[in-house]
Image (cartoon, rainbow, N blue to C red; front, side):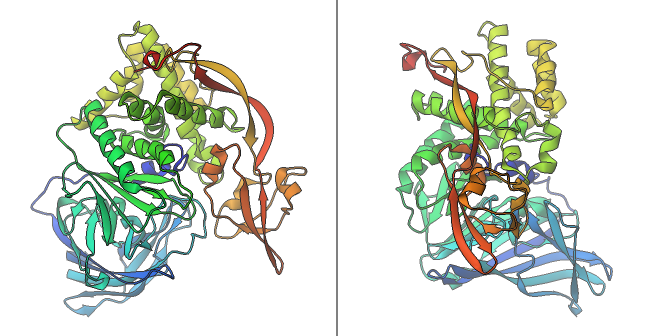
Length: 571
């Protein structure tokens, strides 16, 4: 997510939660699973549709009382169809299998499990209907996983609507589409390719990080190929989408060469409307899903598109978001600038957006090991892997360049991590710290430990190149004016109202039940962005709008050095 996702964009955070294991080698023991998707009943005016799902799973063996199917109920603050699906049936050679449900304990990610009422043996067929309703999500901001309908079609991510067998076997998976319910002109695609696709043996949960889209799609480029870059979207966008996707196509080619990617790897962009987190996105299998709103400026999406694309090359075996998100933030403006696809001033604005949010963040000293358990309770926590991570990598790059007298840079370490990943070697935190130590000696692990502990990450004035220099500016802290945990859960009830805060002055009161339709991470990024809460107080319902800002503090920023020309900027 650039920083507009979950951050500036959305939610890549989740990128870490969602990227799945690749397919395991085909084996004689692999079972088969056919997934057939039948979308239909699209009501464009009301934002309603349905998706009928059929699973044919070979050689299932289960005792009575054993869990046979599973689907998350909530994943990354996003509801699935686990509690709203209808007409669920399972049959084997003996006929219908009675099913009951058992939910895991409620958590950030928890699942519903379907329990067999009798022993199951042999091939089974599972059928159910997934309802699609474009009503804005109750929980507020989250990755754009949910099923939606737009432009006469449907789209969604598998983790919100595909039930999976409750086992760890390898499956050869056949993805099939039945588009008769969408009428003439409809097509279908997914993260794995156009139309019907057959996947080699691998874990069934590959489907959880797969984007599915069907309907009267628009595409870039044409003709569509299963190799290289392609983009898909439906309906009318409020801007010219094709030039933006052509820009993204150019950037993907440039990045593939920068990261030494062999060949022309497939990469798909899916673009969807999002009523609550416009401009957000999330990286998924071989693809990413980016969103827009009615007021979206396509220029603002470039950072999101760049950020999410970089996640293709930031997969690793370690824990924490600081690595994948930090690298994506560091490079999201730099690589398009190097490629000649944005200006030096646009790159500078990207640097300063990250720095302004980080240095004005009251919680920027939160240790890394506290981020995951507190991730959804406070957007100021949520943005730290992005902001602190991006500035950490800028500090690392500056130190390496000075230590090597300009002969080496952060690029060399990232490319080595990617080489190891492609070679099947371990790419975890220990591997990263070893590379730092080789470059910087004892200063490398000390810097890394300081970042993990929450110490301030401050690049030197020239660490972004001779074109820019550091200075001190002022910014107001993001401050809701009440306990941010008020926004956790289905029913958002204000508590911990701060006397004299902007929220109190605007009329918010403890006990108010509120809803909102913006991404809090995006509001936090914009010093001028107001927040509108729909307040329910007793029998009254009314909007309250205010600027969620507190005290003004010093923040570090960068600006063009006197007389610096574009040619002086970091390449």
